[in-house]
Picture 1 (cartoon, rainbow over the protein chains, first blue to last red):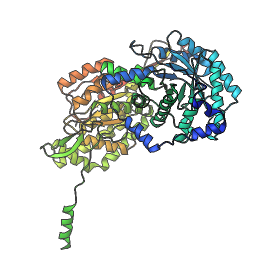
Picture 2: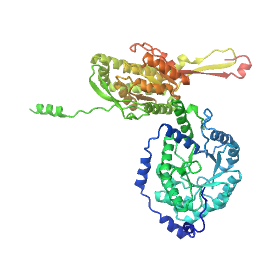
Picture 3: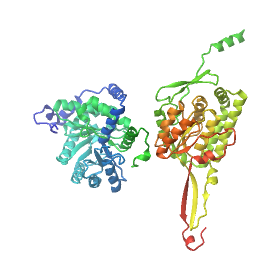
Picture 4: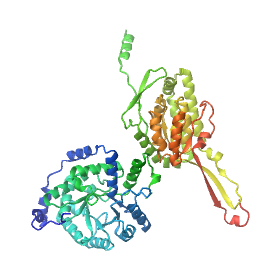
Length: 320
Length: 303
């Protein structure tokens, strides 16, 4: 695994020296051809994935799911049920792989940790005043430390979109580095850009580079709490960013589309994007995740269909 | 002179053929497979191309029917009756079109076909009237030996796959479809293989009456090809085998046993007769509630 920090000698190390140099760098990134990007994403979505390739893709997608519950009404019981499902997604078929992680609010981390103990399933926690991110830095850091102390393996932070859209990139950068520091060595950091609020593809590209420069281990599209979430186009853009970043720095960064991915068909389309853009190195749940809740049920129904030859139904998966 | 001109102009008008399409989830898609097949009248003359559905169309129809089930089964019986009556009203307005289609499909004279269409519209009205009466006939309070109110009420089974009769393409179709949806089930109809056009036109009537999208889904194509995935589908609760021949019916019944589907076996039916409530009750389940009568019961004067 490549080291996750830029060495002092690397030319990109200096771009965050000041607000103006960071702005110069981010605005110097090539503009995004929106039509071309969407056409590329759409054309990659037409690949036909069948039989054994489909079975492989479904198992891979299941192993990449961050099974998520982020509701005000979450109870310890619901989180425990979710944990059990993450460990054994389909109790009727023990060959089904476990999901990558469960994703919960910080106060539920301890419960989730207990529910998945000993299974290899990780516990991710949203933090930093998720989903709006409108709180003082101290409060955000306390939120992160809480989650890490409770045993979270991964922290999903939201960037300050207000500061980003106002052009105060260094503030966003400093916040990410501070959160990264609060994560310590035990937790990986996912940085959520809320692409639906960034207005343009250019902004998504800038945010991706900003996040990667600041030390994110993962870049994540969205919170799932706004109207526009992960789309093939914005995920493709972020995949291009991590590919280029590794080419320049040797550091590999993960990508997590989240929200709005509900069917196996969608999930397989995203896997095609990953393979064709970033490459095979990313086809692993250490580098690519799906933030989703209802997706898993559809993947399981498709898996049952492949195994038995008859269409399954929602009566044969959990209601959650 | 001018009259003659009129006639030649009329003769030169290009014919506008109708593209028959499937009806799934309130929309009119072509078959996912892109296939069509030729539909001919009883004498072998070409009538139109109809979509040749695949198993994926069947799967999509089940998803649509499942989605519509909550709303349709939750609607009041009175409301369902009104909606079904509205369908009869819409059919009445298209009487001529259906007369023509039935005459072509079944090789009937125009007057005989018109009589069939009239009987079909009356069948809708008949079943529309049953929606809020069936519960009183097959449900009710049961006398039990204990301090309980004991109530039985009929509940819809869920998603029902209906193989429409092969010969009676319109009256037979409505006679098997209407009772299924009257009681709150949602349906996937596999139209008569050789004469699917009345069924596909009925879909247009359903779309323009108040029947919510997904309550009825109409597929045309090879009955055996579409029915097989429907019979084994885990999210279909019942299947009416009216349009299956003996061999196919046996196969489908075996496949349907997998998730304990309710199966209505094919039986000889004269669709012109008044049907009785057998087809209504075939796709109903009975829910019985035992309710303690409380202090009344304790004091020994239950009821």
